[in-house]
Image (cartoon, rainbow, N blue to C red; front, side, top):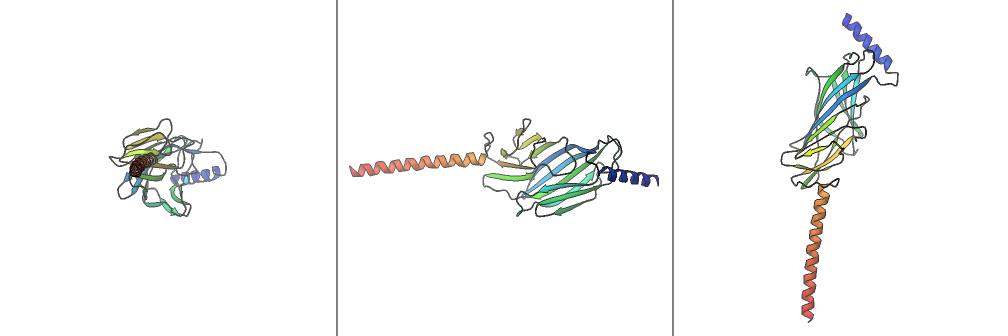
Amino acid sequence: MIKRLLLLFFLFSSIFLSGYSYTVEQFTQYDSTITILEDNKIEIKKQLAIRNIHDAGIIPGQVEFKIFNADPSDPLKIVEYSAKNRYDEDIRSRLSTTQNFTSIALDIFQPILPGFEYEITLTYVIEYDPSGIFFKRVEIPLKESTRVPILAGDVFVEVPEGKYFTYLSYENEDAIIEGNTASFSLQEDTPDLLIFEYSFIPLKIGPLAGSLVFWSLVNVILLIILGMEIKRELKKMHKRRK
Protein backbone atom coordinates (compact mmCIF):
# COMPACT_ATOMS: atom_id res chain seq x y z
CA MET A 1 0.00 0.00 0.00
CA ILE A 2 2.80 2.40 0.90
CA LYS A 3 4.60 1.64 -2.37
CA ARG A 4 1.43 2.42 -4.33
CA LEU A 5 0.98 5.72 -2.49
CA LEU A 6 4.59 6.68 -3.17
CA LEU A 7 4.19 5.80 -6.84
CA LEU A 8 1.03 7.92 -7.06
CA PHE A 9 2.85 10.78 -5.33
CA PHE A 10 5.74 10.65 -7.82
CA LEU A 11 3.30 10.35 -10.71
CA PHE A 12 1.30 13.43 -9.70
CA SER A 13 4.53 15.31 -9.02
CA SER A 14 5.77 14.51 -12.54
CA ILE A 15 2.48 15.61 -14.09
CA PHE A 16 2.59 18.84 -12.08
CA LEU A 17 6.20 19.57 -13.06
CA SER A 18 5.53 18.84 -16.73
CA GLY A 19 3.47 22.03 -16.88
CA TYR A 20 6.62 24.09 -16.35
CA SER A 21 9.25 24.88 -18.94
CA TYR A 22 12.35 24.18 -16.89
CA THR A 23 14.19 20.90 -17.21
CA VAL A 24 14.02 18.35 -14.41
CA GLU A 25 15.92 15.54 -16.15
CA GLN A 26 18.95 15.15 -18.40
CA PHE A 27 20.80 12.45 -20.30
CA THR A 28 24.13 12.45 -18.49
CA GLN A 29 25.21 9.50 -20.63
CA TYR A 30 24.36 9.04 -24.30
CA ASP A 31 26.97 6.62 -25.66
CA SER A 32 26.46 4.95 -29.04
CA THR A 33 28.19 1.94 -30.58
CA ILE A 34 27.46 1.58 -34.30
CA THR A 35 28.52 -1.65 -35.99
CA ILE A 36 28.22 -2.58 -39.66
CA LEU A 37 26.91 -6.16 -39.81
CA GLU A 38 26.61 -8.64 -42.64
CA ASP A 39 23.58 -8.77 -44.97
CA ASN A 40 23.43 -4.96 -45.22
CA LYS A 41 22.46 -4.39 -41.58
CA ILE A 42 23.66 -1.96 -38.94
CA GLU A 43 23.42 -2.48 -35.17
CA ILE A 44 23.10 0.65 -33.06
CA LYS A 45 23.53 0.12 -29.32
CA LYS A 46 23.08 2.98 -26.89
CA GLN A 47 23.99 3.18 -23.21
CA LEU A 48 21.84 5.92 -21.69
CA ALA A 49 21.37 7.41 -18.24
CA ILE A 50 18.56 9.80 -17.27
CA ARG A 51 19.40 11.85 -14.17
CA ASN A 52 16.90 13.63 -11.98
CA ILE A 53 18.27 17.18 -11.57
CA HIS A 54 15.22 18.43 -9.68
CA ASP A 55 14.97 18.74 -5.90
CA ALA A 56 12.03 16.34 -5.78
CA GLY A 57 11.42 12.84 -7.08
CA ILE A 58 10.21 12.42 -10.67
CA ILE A 59 8.81 9.73 -12.97
CA PRO A 60 10.07 10.11 -16.57
CA GLY A 61 6.88 8.63 -18.07
CA GLN A 62 7.08 8.20 -21.82
CA VAL A 63 10.50 8.87 -23.33
CA GLU A 64 10.41 8.90 -27.12
CA PHE A 65 13.34 8.60 -29.52
CA LYS A 66 12.55 9.92 -32.98
CA ILE A 67 14.72 9.15 -35.99
CA PHE A 68 13.83 11.45 -38.87
CA ASN A 69 14.05 10.14 -42.42
CA ALA A 70 16.50 11.91 -44.69
CA ASP A 71 14.39 10.78 -47.64
CA PRO A 72 10.60 10.54 -46.96
CA SER A 73 10.23 8.19 -49.91
CA ASP A 74 12.66 5.74 -48.28
CA PRO A 75 11.77 5.43 -44.55
CA LEU A 76 14.16 3.88 -42.08
CA LYS A 77 13.75 0.11 -41.71
CA ILE A 78 14.21 -1.11 -38.14
CA VAL A 79 14.13 -4.91 -38.29
CA GLU A 80 14.54 -5.52 -34.55
CA TYR A 81 15.00 -3.57 -31.33
CA SER A 82 15.13 -3.97 -27.56
CA ALA A 83 15.12 -1.71 -24.49
CA LYS A 84 16.38 -2.91 -21.11
CA ASN A 85 17.07 -1.38 -17.71
CA ARG A 86 20.19 -1.81 -15.57
CA TYR A 87 18.92 -5.20 -14.36
CA ASP A 88 18.61 -6.46 -17.96
CA GLU A 89 14.83 -6.38 -17.67
CA ASP A 90 12.70 -5.38 -20.65
CA ILE A 91 11.31 -1.85 -20.63
CA ARG A 92 7.82 -1.58 -22.04
CA SER A 93 8.20 -0.02 -25.47
CA ARG A 94 6.65 0.31 -28.90
CA LEU A 95 7.84 1.04 -32.40
CA SER A 96 5.98 3.25 -34.85
CA THR A 97 6.81 4.51 -38.33
CA THR A 98 5.51 7.49 -40.27
CA GLN A 99 6.52 9.02 -43.57
CA ASN A 100 8.78 11.52 -41.80
CA PHE A 101 10.24 9.59 -38.88
CA THR A 102 10.53 6.30 -37.01
CA SER A 103 9.90 6.36 -33.27
CA ILE A 104 10.84 4.11 -30.36
CA ALA A 105 8.81 5.07 -27.28
CA LEU A 106 9.72 3.78 -23.82
CA ASP A 107 7.34 3.76 -20.85
CA ILE A 108 9.43 4.53 -17.76
CA PHE A 109 7.30 4.71 -14.64
CA GLN A 110 10.13 4.01 -12.21
CA PRO A 111 10.52 6.83 -9.66
CA ILE A 112 13.91 8.59 -9.73
CA LEU A 113 15.06 10.36 -6.57
CA PRO A 114 16.96 13.68 -6.79
CA GLY A 115 20.51 13.14 -8.07
CA PHE A 116 19.85 9.53 -9.04
CA GLU A 117 19.85 8.03 -12.55
CA TYR A 118 17.81 5.53 -14.55
CA GLU A 119 19.98 3.47 -16.90
CA ILE A 120 18.79 2.27 -20.30
CA THR A 121 20.31 -0.01 -22.92
CA LEU A 122 18.59 0.68 -26.23
CA THR A 123 19.53 -1.50 -29.20
CA TYR A 124 18.10 -1.50 -32.69
CA VAL A 125 19.11 -3.02 -36.03
CA ILE A 126 18.38 -1.26 -39.30
CA GLU A 127 18.63 -2.34 -42.92
CA TYR A 128 20.51 -0.16 -45.37
CA ASP A 129 21.35 -0.14 -49.04
CA PRO A 130 25.04 0.75 -49.47
CA SER A 131 25.72 2.61 -52.69
CA GLY A 132 28.96 2.39 -54.67
CA ILE A 133 31.20 -0.37 -55.99
CA PHE A 134 34.60 0.11 -54.36
CA PHE A 135 33.36 2.66 -51.82
CA LYS A 136 30.29 1.97 -49.67
CA ARG A 137 28.35 5.05 -48.54
CA VAL A 138 26.10 4.79 -45.48
CA GLU A 139 23.76 7.25 -43.74
CA ILE A 140 22.85 6.48 -40.14
CA PRO A 141 21.08 8.22 -37.22
CA LEU A 142 23.64 9.71 -34.86
CA LYS A 143 21.53 11.57 -32.33
CA GLU A 144 17.85 10.75 -31.98
CA SER A 145 15.36 13.54 -31.31
CA THR A 146 14.12 13.41 -27.71
CA ARG A 147 12.57 15.82 -25.22
CA VAL A 148 15.29 15.06 -22.63
CA PRO A 149 18.41 17.24 -23.11
CA ILE A 150 21.62 15.36 -23.96
CA LEU A 151 24.44 16.45 -21.66
CA ALA A 152 27.27 14.19 -22.84
CA GLY A 153 27.99 11.16 -24.98
CA ASP A 154 30.58 9.28 -26.99
CA VAL A 155 30.19 7.61 -30.39
CA PHE A 156 32.08 4.54 -31.59
CA VAL A 157 31.68 3.37 -35.22
CA GLU A 158 33.06 0.07 -36.55
CA VAL A 159 33.11 -1.14 -40.15
CA PRO A 160 34.05 -4.71 -41.22
CA GLU A 161 37.62 -5.95 -40.81
CA GLY A 162 39.89 -5.06 -43.71
CA LYS A 163 37.89 -1.91 -44.51
CA TYR A 164 38.86 1.72 -43.89
CA PHE A 165 37.01 4.98 -43.40
CA THR A 166 37.36 7.18 -46.46
CA TYR A 167 34.90 9.89 -45.43
CA LEU A 168 33.02 11.13 -42.36
CA SER A 169 30.47 13.94 -42.63
CA TYR A 170 31.18 14.94 -39.03
CA GLU A 171 34.54 15.02 -37.24
CA ASN A 172 35.33 17.17 -34.21
CA GLU A 173 38.70 17.94 -32.65
CA ASP A 174 38.72 14.78 -30.52
CA ALA A 175 37.85 12.39 -33.35
CA ILE A 176 40.09 9.32 -33.61
CA ILE A 177 40.17 7.16 -36.75
CA GLU A 178 42.23 3.97 -36.61
CA GLY A 179 41.81 1.26 -39.24
CA ASN A 180 38.19 0.11 -39.27
CA THR A 181 37.10 2.14 -36.21
CA ALA A 182 36.23 5.77 -35.59
CA SER A 183 35.25 7.53 -32.36
CA PHE A 184 34.29 11.04 -31.29
CA SER A 185 32.19 12.81 -28.67
CA LEU A 186 28.74 14.32 -29.04
CA GLN A 187 28.54 18.10 -28.86
CA GLU A 188 25.82 20.73 -29.19
CA ASP A 189 26.52 21.16 -32.91
CA THR A 190 26.59 17.43 -33.62
CA PRO A 191 24.13 16.66 -36.46
CA ASP A 192 21.30 14.16 -36.13
CA LEU A 193 22.59 12.11 -39.08
CA LEU A 194 26.06 10.84 -39.91
CA ILE A 195 27.16 10.02 -43.44
CA PHE A 196 30.30 7.96 -43.81
CA GLU A 197 32.09 6.03 -46.51
CA TYR A 198 34.31 2.98 -46.22
CA SER A 199 36.34 0.87 -48.60
CA PHE A 200 39.13 -1.69 -48.83
CA ILE A 201 41.13 1.15 -50.42
CA PRO A 202 42.65 3.26 -47.58
CA LEU A 203 42.15 6.61 -49.29
CA LYS A 204 41.22 9.55 -47.06
CA ILE A 205 42.42 13.07 -47.81
CA GLY A 206 41.10 15.67 -45.38
CA PRO A 207 37.37 16.40 -45.70
CA LEU A 208 37.19 15.03 -49.26
CA ALA A 209 35.36 11.78 -49.91
CA GLY A 210 37.71 8.96 -50.89
CA SER A 211 35.44 7.96 -53.77
CA LEU A 212 35.61 11.49 -55.19
CA VAL A 213 39.42 11.50 -55.02
CA PHE A 214 39.67 7.98 -56.46
CA TRP A 215 37.40 8.53 -59.46
CA SER A 216 38.93 11.95 -60.10
CA LEU A 217 42.37 10.30 -60.30
CA VAL A 218 40.96 7.62 -62.60
CA ASN A 219 39.48 10.28 -64.87
CA VAL A 220 42.74 12.23 -64.94
CA ILE A 221 44.69 9.09 -65.86
CA LEU A 222 42.16 8.25 -68.60
CA LEU A 223 42.41 11.81 -69.97
CA ILE A 224 46.23 11.57 -70.01
CA ILE A 225 46.06 8.23 -71.85
CA LEU A 226 43.51 9.67 -74.29
CA GLY A 227 45.72 12.71 -74.87
CA MET A 228 48.75 10.48 -75.53
CA GLU A 229 46.75 8.39 -77.99
CA ILE A 230 45.51 11.49 -79.80
CA LYS A 231 49.06 12.85 -79.96
CA ARG A 232 50.34 9.52 -81.33
CA GLU A 233 47.64 9.45 -84.01
CA LEU A 234 48.41 13.05 -85.00
CA LYS A 235 52.08 12.14 -85.43
CA LYS A 236 51.12 9.19 -87.66
CA MET A 237 48.90 11.42 -89.81
CA HIS A 238 51.69 13.97 -90.08
CA LYS A 239 54.15 11.28 -91.28
CA ARG A 240 51.69 9.99 -93.88
CA ARG A 241 51.28 13.45 -95.34
CA LYS A 242 55.05 13.74 -95.76
